[in-house]
Structures are given as structure tokens and as C-alpha cells.
Image 1: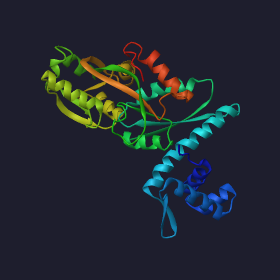
Image 2: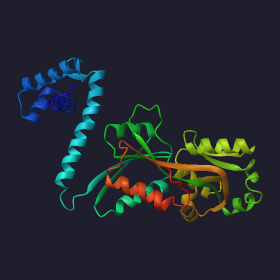
Image 3: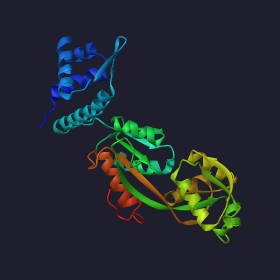
Image 4: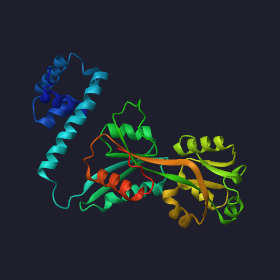
Length: 307
């Protein structure tokens, strides 16, 4: 069996991370020829070039970038093991970096993250909002601990990630009192021709709505399309049109936007996922989120499916 020399791998990883042999040598407190020799030894053992010189700079080859990703994970796990064995200083917060897909309703994201903030151990929460594919790239580089999304990681994605189903819920149509009085009668057939505020095409909810309306032969009038769910609800509050939102946020939507529930859209479901690089969850904040979502937030509708 071929074994990697992890000292060689460490020197390569530091050169790649620091950007030069000089900087890595300074970090390691070793002579530059020593560090260069260790990297060359790794290249010989792998039979691949890991760096190429571009002008006066060192750049990783395609193989180098692949090896670097694995090295990142290996040494990240090593740091995690050391921290676990030593224990963190009392009172020092555990940083928890979460990527939130821009299509995820803000209310849902808040309710999903809330259990992590109630842990006995202090948590320093850092949230990033972006496109799901960009967040998954950050997850693969260990820049994020978790990604929250309305869809699992695509099976063919280059990122090695595991999607944990948090739960699912129905979809409720809301509107102002005037619109609710008009469209509640004979719902959902009443939505045929009704002004409807839709999420944009890149969302799972939009695809589910389009599919359901097509199957039922109902054609609402598109009164607006919104990428941001909070902005969509703000326009819904003005009476521009009716709109759909997850049933798990029904009480908050009614109270915050002063709208009324008109009815539920049959088989349309919203699903929410926690995506991590771990199949078995170790981060205490991630574990708290998954447990609370399944036991409390989606307790009536979650079907007990395995992660």
C-alpha cells in the first residue's frame, strides 16, 4: 500500500496557502531549500507536478489544486481533533459560519438557526447569503460550516457534500383582507386569472407552483416576480397580488404583513435542507439545528426520513 508522507503534504499545503516558499519557510522556521526539497519529494512520490512557475510566482497545477483540497480537509480535521482533545477556553465563543441560499425565506432561516443560539456553549454566528452553488464552493473549502437551502446538493455537483433533510411543510396563499374576501370563495379555482406574486424561476417553490397550476389547469396572472422573498411579501402587503409562503411561517406572515390566509395549495410542499461536508454531524450547532427542526419546527409534517 502506498502511503503519503504527511510531513511533505504539510509543507506543500503551507506553500500553497501562503503563496510562496519564502512565506512557508518563515511559518515553519525552516530554510527555504528544506521546504522546497520536501515539496519536490511529495511530487516524486505522487508522480505529478504540483506547482508551476508563472513569471516570478508559483501557481498550483490542476493536480496541485486537487491535492490542496484534500490537504485542507486533512489538516482541518487535525485541528478539530486537537481542539476537541484540549478543550476550548471557558467562555470563548465557537464560531459558526452559515451560508444561507438567497432563495430561502428569511423567517425560515431565522427559525432554523435559532436553536444554535440557545446552546449552553456561546456561539458566534456569522451568516452569508449567496447563490447555492457559490455557498457550496465555500463549504468545500471549509469556509462555511453549514449551508441552508430549499433543495439538496445536486447529485452531479463537484462538491463532496451531504444533504440532511430538516423537514417539509405545506404552502399557504396569502392576501390582503380585500383580496382574501374575493379569492377565498371557490379556492383554489378562484386563482384562475388572479394577480399572483411569484418567486423567480431559480427557486424550487416557483417550479413547484408552476407544476401544480399546470396540473390543475389554473392560470393566475403574473403580477410580479421577486428574487427576494421578503420583498415579495412587502409588495403582497400592498395588495398588488396574492402570494404563497411556507405554512411553517404562517403566523409570522399574517402578523408582520397584515395579510390573511386564503387557502392551502394541495400537494405543493416546501422542503428545507442543511448541507454539510459531514455525513455524521459533529459540530454542536449543526446538530442542534437538525434536531430542533425535526423534533419541534416540522414535528407535525416531517416524515422521519433519514439524513
